[in-house]
Length: 523
Image (cartoon, rainbow, N blue to C red; front, side):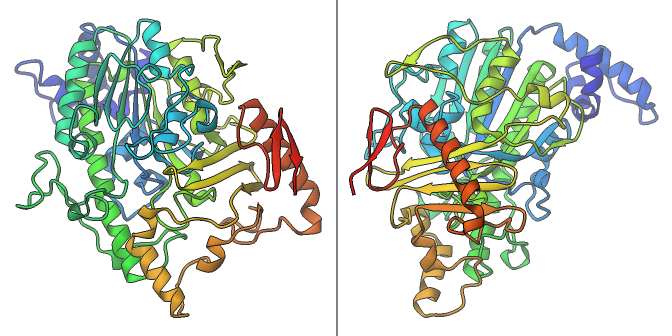
């Protein structure tokens, strides 16, 4: 009863739905909490007696950022993620290993290795055919070898198939990308199908969503926020009740300029986030209906920060700080952890929960050791410490977009190393209404109402050092200040040590060449 007792609050919400399977039973409106709990406990025990699976449900949103009610955003409506947060732990300082999002970020989540170590250097597409090294063992492949049933529904964008192997696969490879990434009704049909097939098994299911990434089909809006909204030209998603937002009333994240175009851009993104959230409500309900809720670790995160200038593709917190909500039958309700954690911690957490160890293997002749750590201890005691520091990376976007960044962040400082000399603006951001307005105002020498200057945004020093004690928005680069030189050198050494430990091909700074792991100057 200990496990069930910790789940009481959230499961009561689903009580009436579960009881629908028992003909003639209806709750008494005057039933006391204790009596309801007793009835609920008996029913759930009976319901669980028909299943035996212990599983992990990993839900990955696309570029959704921290724009959720659980992260104190009072504008956007995300009741289902907020409900998950009430029965789990909300990590306020979780960081994506890959700030570019997309394939690189998903590869890090699903291997426990940063993209430069697993080989997924950039986006996987027809024009950018990046793949992980064939020697890599993805989470799904490791679990499958242990007899755990694995599945993926949604956007995969990873390869080769031998690395990311699943027993059940419904992705853009065998479905329309819009449908499999954003049609919450169709996605939920597949989720229910997976649970119906594997409810008696230990399982690992990935639901990888396209919301709230910017849209490749502009006729549906900047974030495909109109796709399936019931109009004649946009089709219908039966289970989606579209939510619209008034941009003029929104409280802006610090990295979004106070401009009409940017406000509408953000409102469109919020509409996409609301669809993502309504879908998650469906998927959790399907988990409950399958009788697997009390034995499943539910993890929600996103590939990166939102696709706005100053956020996605940047190692600043606006682009690197991502949501991470973990619900478990062993957690206390409504807990918040400010431990420093990374998306690289998700793989060790999955292994820990399922009782699996990482098998010994090598990549390019070098033994693989995960640098992340399990978050299971923080689920029962969120006040425990996380990582001492986290590491952020970026390599390519498309093959012609080399935006190599390495960064280290601890409680007080962040050091960013920029391999490039001029920061390129990726097309999805360049074509956004927000950036277009910023660019036009800058050309006209008008006020941009942004927290940065656009010209300095594209020209950055090789090193950026920020002190969070007085500069939480990372505006003042102190890398050249004499009083920070010792801190700068210490962080440089730690970053280089991690790069060597993860076999980073981009080890050396500008004007240097890598000779057997040693950076030699040639300038």
